Image (cartoon, rainbow, N blue to C red):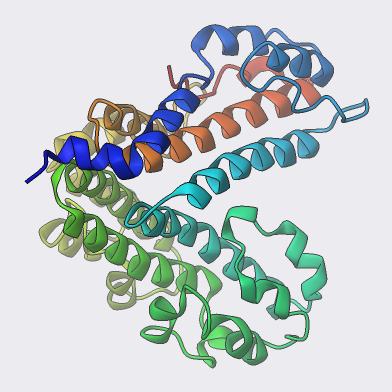
Length: 350
C-alpha cells in the first residue's frame, strides 16, 4: 500500500501547493498598520497595491466606495476558489462543493426573504454571493411566490436533501426566515461533518474540529438570539447542529436556558468557550462575543496549516480570507466615515 502522503500528492499536491502560496499572500499585521493610517479610500487602494492584492482596484474610478471594494474583494476570492474547484479531483471536488453549499444557503434565504417582501427576483440575483450560485438560479425569474420559488429552486438544487427533510412549501410563508436558515445549516453542517469523518486521517482530525466549533458557535448564538422571541425551547432544540463538542449534554443544558447568564454557566463547562465568554462584553472598549468567536476561529484555521496531506487547509484558507475581507471593509468604512476611534477593532490573522 502506498503512503498516504504520496497518493495525496498524486491527486491533490498541485492544489495544496497553490493554496499554501495563496496563504502566503494573506495580509500581515504590518499591512494593517499601514491601512489604518490611510486618510482616504484612494490611500487604502494605494497600500493594497503593494500587497498580493496588486492592481485589483486599478480599473475603478475615483472616488472609490466601500461597496466597490467589497465587490472586488469577493470577486478575487471567487476566482481563486473556482480555479481550485475546476482543477480538483474526487474527493476534493466534492469537499469544495460542500464549502460552497453554505453560500448557497445564504443565497436561497436572500431570495426567500425578498420574495416574501414582494421584491422582484431580478433585483435580488445581483446581491447573491457568486460562490453560492447554481444552475437553477438563472431559471427562477418566473418565481414570484414562495411556492413557485420552492418548486423552481429548492427541490432541484444541491440543497435539496437538506430541504426535503425539514421544510415544506407551506413553511416558507409560515416559518420565520431565520428559522429556515438555521434548519438548513443544521442539516448541512451535520452532513459535511459526516463526509469529513468518512475521509479519515488528517482531514477528519482537522475538519471535525473546525466544524464542531462552527456547530457549537451556532448553538450558542441561536440560544442567545432566541431570548425575548416567540421561539419555544422545544423548537430551539431542533435548530442545534448535533455534531459539536456540546452534543449531547451541552445542547440539553442550552435548551433549558432562559437568559444570557445561564448560557455563560453552560460555557463554563467547556474551557475553550469559557475563555471566550469571560473575555467578552458590551461595554465600550470590550470585545463582543461575536469578535471572540471570530478570533477563536482564526486560531483554529491557522492551526489547520500545521498538517499536510489533508483537505482542511482549503476550508481554512477560505475562512481566513473571509475574515481578511471583513477586516479591510471595517477599516474602509471607518476611513470613509472619518470615524477613526474604532479603526483598529479588526481581527489580525498573522
